[in-house]
Length: 226
Image 1 (cartoon, rainbow, N blue to C red):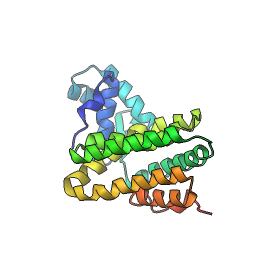
Image 2: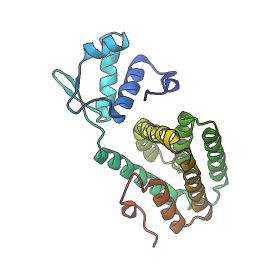
Image 3: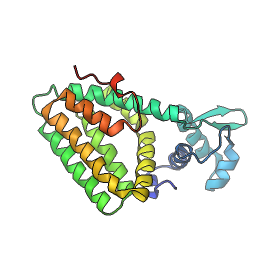
């Protein structure tokens, strides 16, 4: 599986290299303790070493690599790291739900979520895993952005590229192996909207379990119905 080319548009060279390497790390392309050198990556992408350094800095900040004297050692994206990423996502979305549903008017948020869900349906119809992953992530970040909470949005943005990779890899695999499962996935997102619409804690807990139980086995640590 390769990184979608559309993700590379409007990125500078360093960002493009970081995008490709990030995707390959999350997709398990590299063996544990693999070391990438500036010269090696520069040759691979036919660029100078300067944008490779920029890419390494980005990935080092994301803890995807560890910079060593000999180059950049890959930090494997293990199941533990996947769960930790989901932990942070659940914390963000739990807080966002609580904050947003205390607002008097959430009609615009609901409209955005319904529209995005319909775009997800279209992507399933055309077996567009890239588009589905992008709209799936957008669906959830509607809730985050509706908070108008700068610190929360900054944390979300720092995780966004990792989240996009993990969602795309998962959805592309499912689309190839079990397209019928997307009815369940879409229904789970509809439950998410209903929880927001009804401002219902119990429904939101159920929606979290439906949407994330395959990624995280400790949903209750982030959401209590009482």
